[in-house]
Image 1 (cartoon, rainbow, N blue to C red):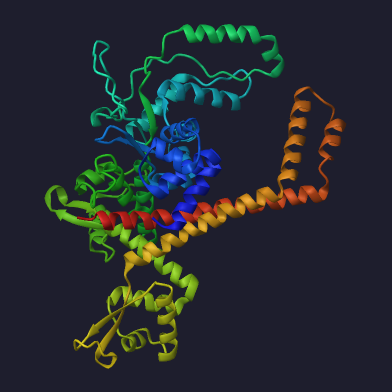
Image 2 (image 1 turned 45 degrees about the vertical axis):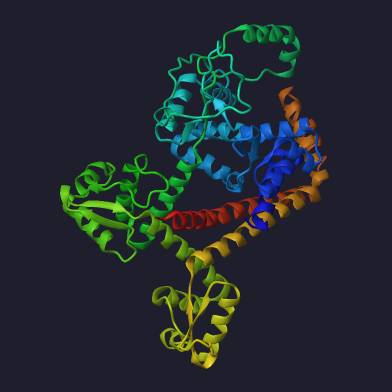
Length: 534
């Protein structure tokens, strides 16, 4: 774990959970697993504060705990899980794209709250959707439940591990920490709830004053009622499944750029057919026959079987090797080589970075080294058709930035320079790690810049919020246009210009964060698949 990762984790925790949680989380990331009292002692915080911070982190799946043999519980914060906070907007946007506003709000609620029961999610989402609808219209619980079930069916959300049920007659003392487990068969099974009702709107302030006693009575009645039927069955967003979807989208996009739209649609169909049956770490998808692929193509693609077979043969013969042929039964069995696809995407990212930083000639040398593996300086000059002085400068520049590495092969045991071959090569894995480290640094810098921009204009932002609140309350009470105009003029023209500049800058920073995160995802996926590759 690098300092850049620790700094980024610290910034993300502080931005989302505040200083206390950030202090505990960062301490656990730096030190590894530790028991409660050691954490309190090392951070200089009270036990109560540490307990509350750990509760928040466990609720959001950012901290795990384990019962040691000696009987005490140790807490650990995996850095990789904290870094996923950066990708939350992308998860939410994906849910919106696939399952409209309902899917977006369900995933958003689960990410904001860490873990929730289905009944609580459905009620909250129905209420939020009702708020945005016209007066007199409400959102039915049944519609939200259906979207929730569709998300579970496609594995975008999953059940949280549960503590085993204990019998009340048992005399044995409870363990210091429960052992959580989930049956794989039940992981995506939605409880059979008959949720009947509609979303509710928030009452205005006057209604709240008038109905204060009534609300209290309703709350007492609700407390006295039985617990919901799905009490204890908590759900969370399945981050691995979202990553699988991002990977598939990147592969489809690469095929579309390489060949054409029809080829990308065939690859998309193959990935969709095997998205639930193939694990996120598998090197290949499940073998699919061309007949199965033909039957599963979207209705809009009216291509005959013969043309489909030609496309599959073209894809299988392509040097990229995204698609491979694994057999001849059923008209030909085809698989997608996921590891090869991720390696190609990572290599393309490295090439793009070299081209942007060092120019097209350096990119030519870099591609040459990727293709030829090992070359001497003279061979690089000849193959790339670049003058010796320029080629030498470019190679040393890339060598100093760790994009290219130098391998020495001595002819004699004394390693004399005159009797040693010096071969340039590209170690894709180490280059990807170096670039990933720089990406973490970039995101941390962007977050710090956004915080600085917001802090510098804090007073102006507070003034703007106050004016907007006054305008909203006056519009609700039916104020005249002249009065509203007077309130709007409380913010002067230069202040308004300053606010617009701030908004534009913050939007640019947010967009940059998302773009860097796309690069981080490709590099992380490639490194993970290469390291775990059997």
